[in-house]
Amino acid sequence: MSDQVHLSGPKTFVTIEEHILGQQRSHPTATGSFSWLLSGITLAARIISAKVRRAGILEVLGEAGDVNVHGEQQQKLDILANKTIEQCLGYRGNVGILASEELDHPKVMGGSSGKYVVIFDPLDGSSNIDVNVSVGTIFAIFERDTSNFNGEDPMTDVLQQGHRQVAAGYIVYGSSTVLTYTTGEGVHMFTLDPTVGGFILAQENVRMPESGKMFSVNEGNWNSFPRGIQEYLKWCKSDAAGPYTARYIGSLVADFHRTLLRGGIFLYPPTAKSPTGKLRLLYEADPIAFLAEQAGGKATDGQIRILDKQPTSLHERTPFIVGSVREVERVEEFMRKYAESPVA
Ligand code: AHG
Ligand code: MN
Ligand code: MN
Image (cartoon, rainbow, N blue to C red; front, top):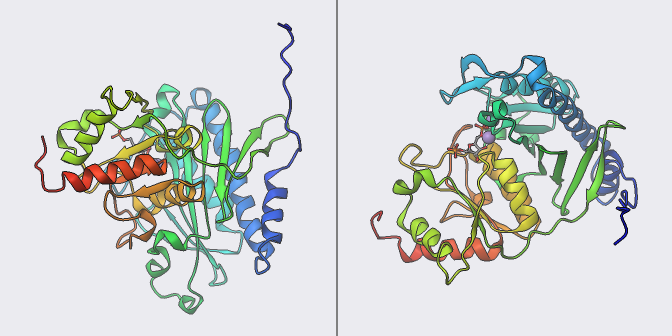
């Protein structure tokens, strides 16, 4: 066995900027405006990554001493990440509306020329920050309805169904910083190379395995799960099923990143504390669902395809089940079978 490990570098050294331009060429109607917008996101990602990686040194750990609209303790990094994205996107000229988990209401930016709406979770999994567990950023991009440029209520441009997204993605600040995005032409992954300060193409057209013996759920909420979810999880743990492996990080971006690459299923069902689910439709479930479907996976609230749900408010929550198509279909079967049954 040779004692040399041959580390092959990337075959072609493609930056995310080059990749976006390439994607744009295949969109005859696309203008440079879209890649200009995405370059604002990659800039924000590099800045947030640097802050996350120096959290213990930069005095950005811990609570900011304030609560957000959800009554959740805001972490300093939630605020910093939110401000970074506002600064990197807000003045690009083509962003008309910014909406964030950390802002009570959407922000209309500058003049009415901004044709894009960017809705984001600036720091996902922030309760994990202080214990050095992976966290992330999630974004969804829509186009504004140009007939609404006369400054009417921006909410009509924010409350769009997920299938109208023109792009979506996440950044996971893990053992490396990985940016994954889709513009509806497949899912593409880039790794931040700190030596050059840029995102380099790691994997193009990522496909989620059709099935996977891994489930990801916070079983602490077991007693209040719907009966169908309880019966599905009991099946996963049975010898008939395998049993499956359980993995739960507690950061949606990290749990989904693993599911996208390895297959399996992530579930955040309704619970006693969050009867309509904990995760937010607009800036957690919708962008992740768009990526999942683009990679051949599936995403539902247990009854309805996530991307078909019509949002009625910015911070609306939803039950969320996402993963390999076979696994999600199996959960749906259990949900139908036990629809009328009381919680066990
Ligand atoms: P955020 O930090 O943006 O509020 O998101 C946290 C979410 C999500 O990342 C994760 O899947 C979920 O909260 C974990 O919730 P539990 O701790 O209740 O399992
Ligand atoms: Mn989140
Ligand atoms: Mn968050």
